[in-house]
Length: 284
Length: 355
Ligand SMILES: Nc1ncnc2c1ncn2[C@@H]1O[C@H](COP(=O)(O)OP(=O)(O)OP(=O)(O)O)[C@@H](O)[C@H]1O
Ligand SMILES: [Mg+2]
Image (cartoon, rainbow over all chains, first blue to last red):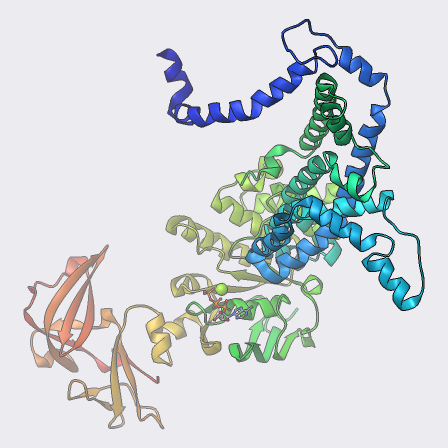
């Protein structure tokens, strides 16, 4: 009875959905965490737990995969930021409050499977493919194919994660009120000062959400390296997949997953702390 | 400095959006140190005019002269003018102090000098000194108003523009801020150009008022002139409840009101006036016992009455026309609804206007 009083009516009404979310979100997570502590290549939680899998990872070269994933994600996010900010800015200026709707158009490619789109790019870039085949037929030149290089992996990731950066960024940029911009200009600010003092800080919430979203997704990227990169680079998600499928070593895969979550989670928290969650979620 | 010289001159200033003319051939001289108010209904082009004067909107044609020099092509950040917006447009991610200091920071003024100036302005505008580090989003409406004004004053502009800054504020606070604004105008001696659609607000504060209608300035004058000598029906109606009768000229000071089939004694009919309107204020109309009680008289039926605080308004129907008679509460009229009554007024209390 006392409990019912302390949790209040709001929480009580939210309880069913809360439980549902808890089961849907926490259950698989807990399972993965649990599995990461059982002996390698076993399949039962009910045995003695140990840190064996983690020790194995630290003695292996998995850290390379971590570094590749984090590095590729970081480069992707930076490139995305440089591409998306001008687009978001233009959209916000041209379409005003409808800009975010227009950005939805950029999500249309998401209706087609990522793998299909990536194979499309393979056909485009492959030797004798759309690009090189055309160059050869028309101009008789035959450059090296860019397929299976790091550059093409980054290209693929930028291409795939663009909507996830653009959408929140456009939202952020269109949140800057025109009059605030006018006011800064009226008070003597130059174009650059208006950007630095008003537009950038006021659109920061959207920019940060875009950064976080595309970074978290990009760290987990796997298809780009597989399909466009020709498996020259093994990102961490690929390691995890191998452990779970080919190697049939679920505990190792689980331990890798837990580490990945820890690394990404820590980075996200650090960024959020640096940028004051209050401001990002819009106190006003 | 000659305080009578014009600081701002507008010559045939025009702004069109596509085929729509928002501001049409405005000619106006604003005197140095003047408090000039532009009033007009919604959509009459007030904001557009102001945006051209601040440099946020380019003029389609015509000239803007600042102390004789044409400034049409000078961008907003180079003009010695500053605007207080209706939305105030404060920087929400900054503190009160940072908002006020914005223009000084832009000019690379040293931080301690900036702060001293901000605190001085805050004192002048009755903002507590410890608000300096407070987030503007946590300030009340009236406080934000003062921050916006302080921010504009810190820029030290020659002309301050205001676009209905008080329209979203409740009546009592608005009255206080109107007074404060007038005080600041006196203290700083700067030229203020103020927009409102409330003529009452304009009357309280202004040295001169310009009335805008559909992109044109239809009348410019002192509050007294606008109130007592409106030139058009539009201006007279803008001032508040008035009684307006369509009339045609009939003699040197006689007009004919076809609607009532009567001749009316009017002020001197100007040369060239053939048809227009006769305006009588509700407080100039009175109930009379018999036809000799006033120079002009109409018979009607008492239709309704409204108590407006210290005053009472009576509606009197004469044919299909409703007249408004206003009396002080202590002089309330004793008549009953649906009584037949006589209302009258003297020629000197009426005004002849054109359309
Ligand atoms: N950028 C624009 N493009 C097209 N039309 C515009 C633009 N800005 C203003 N207008 C039009 O010009 C007219 C005058 O607008 P303005 O904002 O100057 O009116 P206002 O007198 O300030 O009205 P309010 O009292 O409602 O603020 C309006 O009909 C408006 O629709
Ligand atoms: Mg306006």
